[in-house]
Each structure stands twice: as structure tokens, then as C-alpha cells.
Image (cartoon, rainbow over all chains, first blue to last red; front, side, top):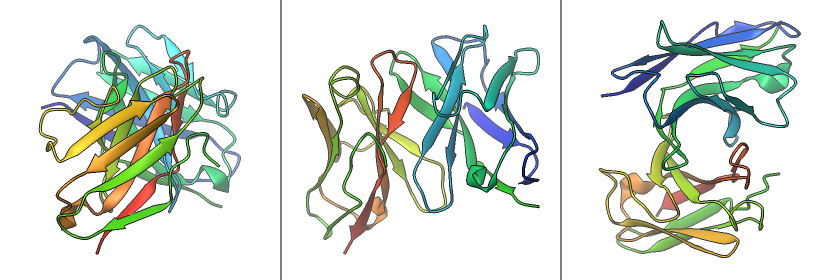
Length: 120
Length: 110
């Protein structure tokens, strides 16, 4: 069974860089027809898509976050990562990694999520 | 404020049928498939409906989706207490490179 697991610091200081990694197990990150993505959810609020990428590095970002984030893939480790720069308190959220099934155009497998707080 | 508009809340009693709406525009719902996600309290979202009306394996047929023009709906029949959750609609912008998510609807089972 496919599993995704987010990892990274739970606390980041304002203006610093948030770095998260998603480890995929039970399947290969290079399998088709899948992209891999990040979605976040501020406390008590709705879901916000951050971006998605393919194992070959084809990346799509949310227009509202494009200037602030980088998503990358490491096929040797079956992982993909998120970097968010110059964070503020508004970036405090649960961050989920998920698999985008491009045949369905939907996120069909999700990690459990990791809470990241931005605070000094 | 989300581009996809959902009612913030909905409710029903056990056994009832409830529907949740999702309104968009010609550049999203009018052009691309709609997905629905269920988020139980304290858990990650789960894909409930994809491609407007398809259910992934394991999703009960009490859940159904439909789309007409620039709007979509999720229907839950035979409402159960375990259906109490937040429900989100999602649709890609017509380029398929930007995902829009509705603000979510909190379903309460009375």
C-alpha cells in the first residue's frame, strides 16, 4: 500500500526558510501517471494547493505562491521536497504531501500532514 | 475568499439525503473535472469523488457527484454519523496547472 510521510521542523522563525520532505514508500516516485504535490491548511481554515511536480522535474506552482516556493524531487531516495522562503506567520499551517493521479486529475493518496508554526 | 464557492455549513439527520454545492466559472468547473474530498476531524483529506462523478475503490455508493455547467454537487444519501466532516470541492484551472479548492462545507449530522 502506498504511503507518504512528511518530515521537517515543526517551528520556523519569521523570514527564514521552511523545508519539508515527503518520503514515498510502497511504490516508486517514478511510476506513471503521477505527479507529486504539496497542499497546506492553516489552522481552522481550508485547503490551499502549493504546487506539484513530476519525477522528471516538470513543476507547476500556485500563482499566489510561485515566487516563494521551490519543489524538487530526489528519485534516488524516493522523496520530494518543499522549500518556502521568507516565511511569515501567515505560513503557519498543516502541510500535506500527496500523489496527484494525472489520469484522474485528483490527489488520491495523502500523507498524514505535518504542522509547521512560524514564530520567533 | 475562494474562487469556488461552497456553503459554509450543511446538516441532516441520520438516513436523510443532503447535497453540497460548489459554484465556479467557465475557466475552472466549466472546463475541467471536479473532485470532492472528505476531511474527518483531525485527519488528512480523503478523495471521495473524481472526474465529477467517479468513486475511488472503497468509497460507498451513498456518495455521488454531479456537474452541470459551472456548478457541481456532492450528494450523500442514507446519512450516517460518521459522515460528519468537512467537504471540499476542487477543480483545476483550464490549463490543468493551477488547482482551485472551495472554502469547504462543514457537515453536521444532527
